[in-house]
Length: 109
Length: 113
Image (cartoon, rainbow over all chains, first blue to last red; front, side):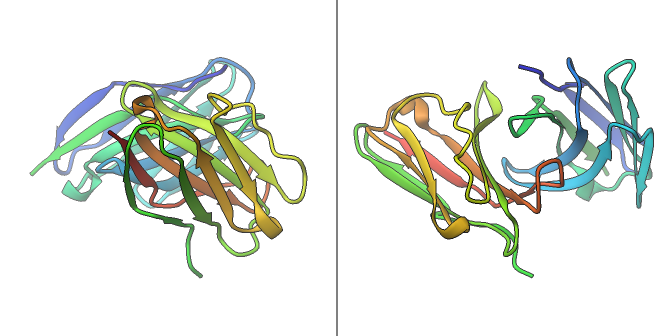
């Protein structure tokens, strides 16, 4: 089955810096979604980008999608301590969402 | 309005017992999904309900797992004869339709001793 793979697996940056996470997938998609998870519970939806879109913004978040390369990136600008969490990309094609293993982001004060 | 709710929050059971996990989707959402998140396996799709159609059970790991959705709203995931490898967080999500944003509940953390 197709699977999103996030890169890097872990990222530690200083507060105020930008954080970039990448996601690659294998087959065609309807859309790609990014989620955040704190402490192993409660997936919070961040952004949905459809296959015919190339870029989307939401507050400090910017998501890009390159369907030719089957990849997406999530940029968090001006990071804050509260951004510390695991971030997952999920591809939506047929049978529910297929998640990657996530990027664990740590924001150091 | 209220988000997706799940109960119980935590469940500890003995190997071999049956458990039922409940999901209340967001009102008006026609699609409901169950996922499982376990160490080493990440998040995996289990089952999908769309309206009154027959569910897509392609993700269920074994015949010990079953789910139903009554009246197109509340869903129950049942695990029979639980095994230790069933220990995981079980997450439910609902959406207004296929291909739209999925909203997740807080999950049920299941521990099989």
